[in-house]
Length: 469
Ligand code: PFF
Image (tube, rainbow, N blue to C red; front, side):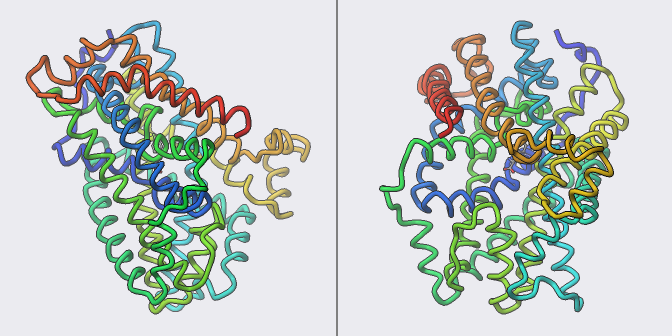
């Protein structure tokens, strides 16, 4: 029995509030930054198709499983897994650790997005913005100047801390109810603008017409990893948000709605980016730099480019903040529920520690002499610094690799084992259907996927990724 059962726990103010918060968690940098660059790098429409198929057959069932575990456990990931069986409380600890580690490096890119929003905002009032041909220089300067990298990372983290301090309904719920609709409106407007450019159809072809020769197991692996990351699955975020959901609210409906909104946002981001990139004759294959380097050059060639740039980066900022607050909430919920720490203290401690640890990945992207000098003056000798570049991976890439390639699939596997094997069909389905009150036509298929298909798919991808694929 979880320790918190005796005190009354926060709940969402409304169903819409929960939905917007969960959608806010799901829609993030994964949709607006990672999805387009993966599509760009892995052959366009083929990646999109693989992503959609895996989302449908693995993402949606596991979303239902994770929300259900939270709704049943009614507490943080550790307590929820423990309530199901003390043997698997370790799954909860892993989820907490994974959420925390992602938060640490999420702030790096969150900081870049905040910086770009500001640069574009000032450009509307006479600032230089990102002048033509200068996008690479500005990007390199941002990531390698410790002053910029650290301060904007901290501004981003502070925004998240302030929202989570406000509490579940007055902070997280209220912020998401504004940010999410705003995000969709801006993306829609930008997609129409982008598709109206001359030459945009080449981008649409790349995005929508599959070239099946580009299909491979490794692309499928990338797509499955992206499904987990984009849906915030496997690290306790949906579990925690589900734990604030009343028992009479349907996890099933939400498990279809959340991925639908999430996918709409990712697809819309593609409709904003690819037509514009092709319209100005650029390549979509610049990888992680697509949004920060290629896109500003695209904006430069467009009418009202600075305004479009500003709207785009503010949207990405909203998306990033709403995801980061869910990561923070996972760990904060643990301290509130298990350790009885007041929300204020829990949020401040976890948030500040994540922000400080996040300085390492924020600095690790810069290879400039200034960055190196600052790292060694802050953290000691250059030899020590090289140890954070373990295996030649910078702290950022290391965290991305450990969480994305190892902990995330394991978190997914934990959901399958818990739902499919430990809870078992009868118990899992009786919670989902509220003892048969709610119809669930696809119950058999759902359970078969959770018990067999999803774990096998995750294992294949996991082993393939570890073997260097
Ligand atoms: N789903 C978020 C995105 O697409 O950017 C990232 C994320 C948020 C992952 C929260 C995990 C999580 F718990």
